[in-house]
Length: 481
Ligand code: UDX
Picture 1 (spheres, rainbow, N blue to C red):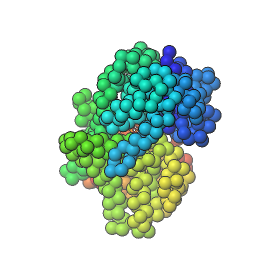
Picture 2 (picture 1 turned 120 degrees about the vertical axis):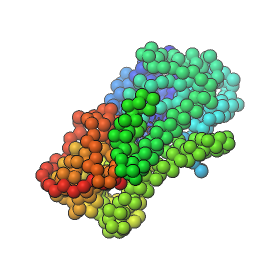
Picture 3 (picture 1 turned 45 degrees about the vertical axis):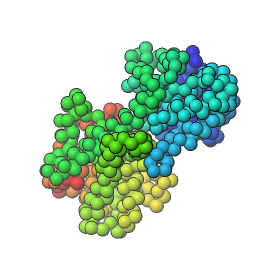
Picture 4 (picture 1 turned 90 degrees about the vertical axis):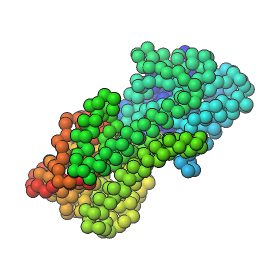
């Protein structure tokens, strides 16, 4: 079996290292961040990812997974070096490839014999070939060093599951030797029936950004439909259900609301647009410009709606925000649509009190000016307006009658379109739901249809509803956003 190294132990790299070790490989992982390495070697995962920490500990104990800070160590050790460093957003939306090239440059002098560098990071098309030329120019092994691209599609919150049983494995290669090595690395999932697709380097690089662009387009499409539903007196939720029953369309990634955020989709859409622009491909540029604009428009929409419900100004208004993570089951607030809305409400003079089951520490680092409340009732105490911005399952279990007793005004904006509007109106709330006709009581959601991807797929048996909430009456109304 080839010996494997993993370069960069962020979200992607640590998960990959742990999962490869769990598949039985000998793995040596490296990072330039000493603290990250110390934590990982001690069995600690520095971010919230269900199931990863026990698997890390198990594989540390087995001895199959080890960590180092020395490129000489990994150069000596590995037959296959997986490049898992970050590619953050750089100037004008372009991907910043600084970490990719720095890692390749640090590794190259230690490559004394034939080996393969397999990139997993999301990169602009053409990067793999640049890495290949660069490494061959300086590695002692020269032309015996090969480069492949093997994009990663894992979702936060499902990282282990997505790594161990992905929908597909894409191998962009330039030689039979590279393909053979990667087939060995992925022999177990391949034997379990995971489709393995072999392409050239450029196609593999493009598959990843095209997949993210398609997912983003799906979300912006349903959000555009939400806008027309509001104007036409229709309801986007049954519309999405009806569309989703068409097997050619599918229901997944058709959850309307505040739009997409996170460390991947927004930056990948912008980076892909920059690549398309550099290549002069106007169709892709205009498609992705629209997708991004619709997405940003959702944030504007929620801020405007909040302002309207407050009578035209947010100054001095007490706003309670439920959820700041970019999606449920995550503590990640990178490009969180919710946190962006919070910042804008605060900039307009609102007093913003936030609750999130796990993302408050990361949010507080980015937006220290908000009030962070330890519970939903504490966040909602005296609120003029409640905003539901990240659809944690906890929030669908809130008793609206109990919450009614602590707020100043019973007004809620459900920007994730997944609360039971009838339940809230029956408890005396005015409910504004994005994408629903004004005056509708909303459609009672079918079991399991509330919220997006993760919430729907997994359920949350472990999370209980906030305590001490019951009673209260007085129907009001639900309106489109
Ligand atoms: C995404 C891709 O799904 C994954 O394949 C890739 O490897 C990395 O980027 P992730 O960032 O973990 O994964 O989040 P994802 O579950 O895709 O959600 C992205 C954003 O879209 C979230 O803000 C989510 O709230 C939003 N979303 C998702 C919607 O608004 N509607 C939907 O129907 C689905």
